Amino acid sequence: MCEENGSFKKFEEDIINYICSNPEVIENGLKIIKREYEVISGSEKRIIDLLGIDKDSNYVVIEVKAHKAGIEVLEQILSYMHLIQKSLSLDKKVRGIIFANEFDEKLKEVELSRYNISLKKYCLELHIEDIK
Image (tube, rainbow, N blue to C red; front, side, top):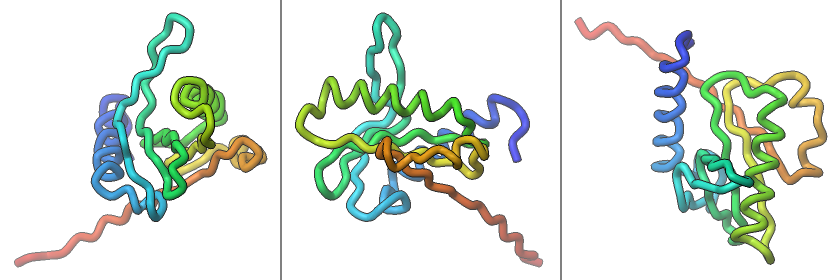
């Protein structure tokens, strides 16, 4: 697919744009409320790819990967979910979704439901037609 880091970043932006315009591809009733939502962790500013609200009015943190999602993304999304829980959602649930086209085996082996995290895989298909 994309080989250079810049290409991955651009492709990730394209995926995020698509999700913003079509949140139902993730799940029915999902509304994206903020793209690149900033949170503060200690003295560090961190950026959540997408913050949404589900049909039950719970927050949904969405982490998008243009390439394979490794086990390290688990710590990343758990941190984001904790920060949202602390700052915005004292009385509501916060869920996480990792959106990628491939997942590391270690990540797939973790019992993610206990953390209220799900994995969503996207697949791309290229269709080419001769016009003349």
